Image 1 (spheres, rainbow, N blue to C red):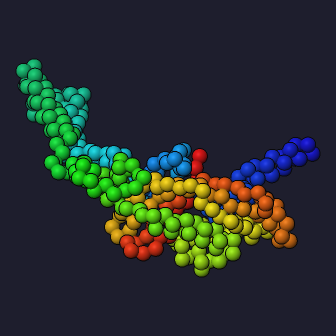
Image 2: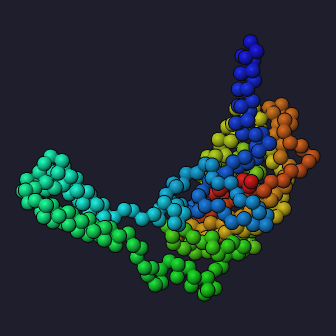
Length: 318
């Protein structure tokens, strides 16, 4: 009986530890989810608002190979087919020769096996020459080719020296793209910052009201799906999260860039709010209606050039 009771208690404790905390019940709270385009698997630069590194994406619909870091597996040189062929040929000849010697036919069989000691030396010299030729071919294939003038590195340097780096607050070194190309930075204006704050407040207001249509207008379909899963979990638990009086306390830009006609801006935001969770009867089960709380998160906003900003990713800070 004691063992059974201990097992049940341990199981319940483990389930509570693995389940999402009620204290992180706000929209997007408790996990890092969404997409940052080709930078999804790259950590955004730290800022004054979020000096610690943002947590990597725990949930995303972006394929890893679409955001492979430069110099990583995507940039690794594949073995040369010609080198592999020459290596296989030399190995095959060596194997045939050894088999011939083992079965008494000389290094190349009966045709040369009776040539005596001089014939054996000639055979060894021939094999050695073929092996040296194969080695030279393989080494020449493996040597890196010289970089072309005006390539991606030169282009990135010219852009920085020419004053075309219009990114505000972001690091110029953060413009690297998954395939080793450069992503053009974009300008983020004061109006954009105002829109970021409005979207932050709009997300939490729609979350509290459980207004899916309002959410759909200011988040990507991927983020909307994650929000829906959170709300379904709240329904399963019989609770409801209410986030009110949202105020942006501080915020700064980590990086901003363009990918085709899409523009991204990753912003670190510290915001205050009244965050409470109530049960079906309206009783507060977590949080305080009188005590504001704060959160620091890294949000990535996305827009089609000329359109409104919407939320495409929310990352927690360590």
